[in-house]
Image 1 (cartoon, rainbow, N blue to C red):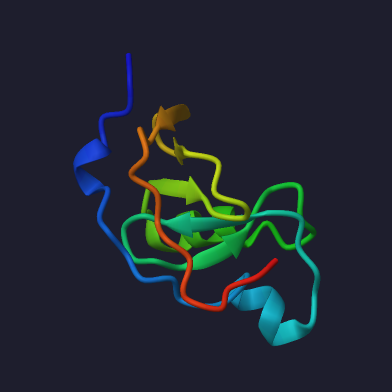
Image 2 (image 1 turned 180 degrees about the vertical axis):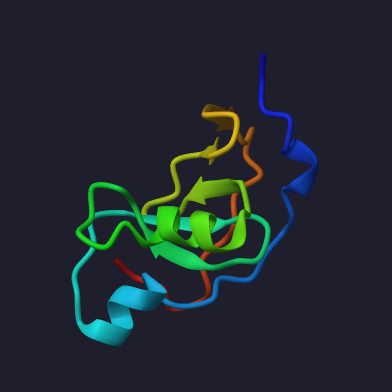
Amino acid sequence: MGCTHLGLFAHVTPSADGCEECLKIGQEWVHLRICRVCGHVGCCDQSIGRHATKHFHATRHPVMETYYPPEGWGWCYIDDQMIDLEGDVTPHPPGWSW
């Protein structure tokens, strides 16, 4: 069975030029994830803050995309499923660098 939340994927604008929470507290991250419901940028579960997963728990927005660097896959937290985005990735803003 695949992800039952694919209809929630939206074209979003990134909320920050890095993990929103890590930037506020001066913490480093490993990789970034972007919420494909609202555009929140958070760090992955290998990062100290695990802010993307915390965003899911706080908002129940189930679908995210890898964002640092863009790898072309997403994840549904509820269905515990990887999603092939088939090229439908969120572009980085002009001047973005990592």
